Length: 198
Picture 1 (cartoon, one colour):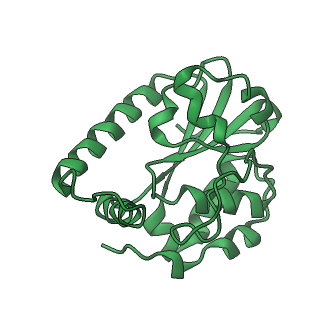
Picture 2 (cartoon, helix red, strand yellow):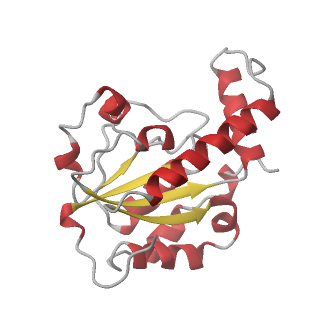
């Protein structure tokens, strides 16, 4: 649910989330260009799949193990947390979640391509089975987030934003308090990186 009124982000953690390969790295890049400080460490380097970088903070991956001591450092900043880890966020903080959504066939194609580059078997799970798994997971995440009073959520359609970014940039601008350089955010969007089109 999108909040309204004046927003002070100093005690709020801005979370960029979504399925892997849904456009979360691009969203982090947009927020950084717009003026939001990010929590990232640069451990995961840019590669052919994400030539502009992953914008990750390694300790996020240990949320399920209970590693939450870094969360105070994230207040007033943006941090990328994939959808599988959202359910491990403690209720003791306020979060504004920008949830990036993308057509599932494109996500699956992009994930399979990444597996091939890693030398892994992309056919271990069929596309139909993987699609059902992802749909069920997203449904679980939706249900969980609706029950969290400390979370405000903004959904962004990656496919739509690539084609016509201005409306969504304005929504993000409003969602985070209207303190961003929308022109610089728009400059980040590179249609040439939209490679898995379905």
